[in-house]
Amino acid sequence: MMDIKTAFPLDFSPVKKTTEFTLSSRPSLSYWQDAWIRLKKNKQALASLFIVVGLVVFTLIGPYVWRVDPSNQELSRISEAPSLGRSVLVLPEEVAYEEVVVAGHEESPTADGASLDATAEIQIMGVPSIQGVRFKWTPVKGAAGYSIYRTQTEPKDRESLGVPLSSIEGGNRVSFDDGFDLQAGRYFYAVVAKNGEESSKFKVISVDLKAGISLSDAQSISPDAKIGEMLKMGARPLGTDYLGRDMLARLIFGARVSLFIGFFAPLLYVILGILIGGISGYFGGKIDDWLMRITDFVLALPFLLFMILFKIAFGAGPGDDGIFPMLIALIVLSWTGAARLTRGQILQLRESEFVQASRLLGAKSLYLIFRHLLPNTLGVILVYLTFAVPSAIFTEAFLSFIGMGVAPPTPSWGSMCNDGIKSFLIHPHEFIFPALFISITVLAFNLLGDGLRDALDPKMRSQS
Image (cartoon, rainbow, N blue to C red):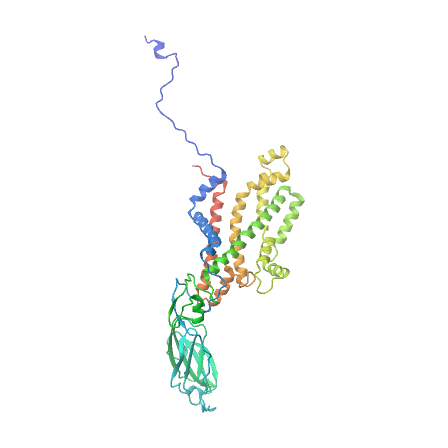
């Protein structure tokens, strides 16, 4: 018979472990640490954050790296395309133009203008350059005047003569001086005789122009410059505008205006909206009714009309920059969204257990609002602020584009777009670069706002 002590030992000795268990626990993270981890997983938002930081660095450090005066006008480099430096010919100073008038030419009032002959010969006067092209031609019998055309493609017929430069009255006036927006390249000039109507015949001459600079302008860059030498000009990575000002320098200084308004105005009107919305949501009752009716009234005001009124009230006339009136208008008229958002969040939180506990412990209303309620809405407000920044930048750009915001010569991205759109078909870089900076900035802030909205949502906290 089996001994019961053998079968069931009474010493209660521990059982040998056959399996080991490892307990794992999620590391303790704060709300903001967890949000940063989730934000880093969003590649678009992280790239947008780097772009925003890059724009700030571009604005603050750019003037110390790119030491070019944004207001300096180089008339020899008007609307120059982007380049890393080019060589130009040093030209002599321009001499006064003297019109050529031939004696003995007789006009025929009865001559048929359409059947007039073309001029026999066109001769270049002096040395043609981007400073000016002068030429003369032999008079046409019976002509009462001449029309001058210019194009950069060789004309084949009357319809392809190009841009009409001048209409000269008098058949004995047989010379012309062209100094209108000349660039390096080949030009074709056509002379057409007329007598009431223009002749169907014309004479064409071609001129090849090299990039050049006057001797006085060249010596301001290099004192040893001489006529006929090639002078190396400074780099203009983004080209120049219609007044010869460096586009990159103006974009750097324009970013200061655009980003100042884009950051400062939303920060102020969001703070104002948080205060109004927090008080309205916490106290409720008549205070809530009055503050929300004021919010509805401000929300119904037309922004553009009040922007005009603010400019008048602050005495901002034509040519003034208009930054301060724009800033005041944005603050006064744009706080309503933040106020409504904060009010909604406070209404959800004011009956929470932690608020009730603080109230039972004797916490005052202002303490509850600023210590408990508003900090718990900070994530939502931060996302709203991120979306408000590109909206303010776009508003500044739009107002400057229509002439209601920042006025020349103060550079801003919007005013630069306004200047560039006038010559977009001829010199597209003057419009494309400021428009590209506006687009990249607005897109970066919007993508960053999307990423922050997901990262700061408590329902999406990491479980790993």
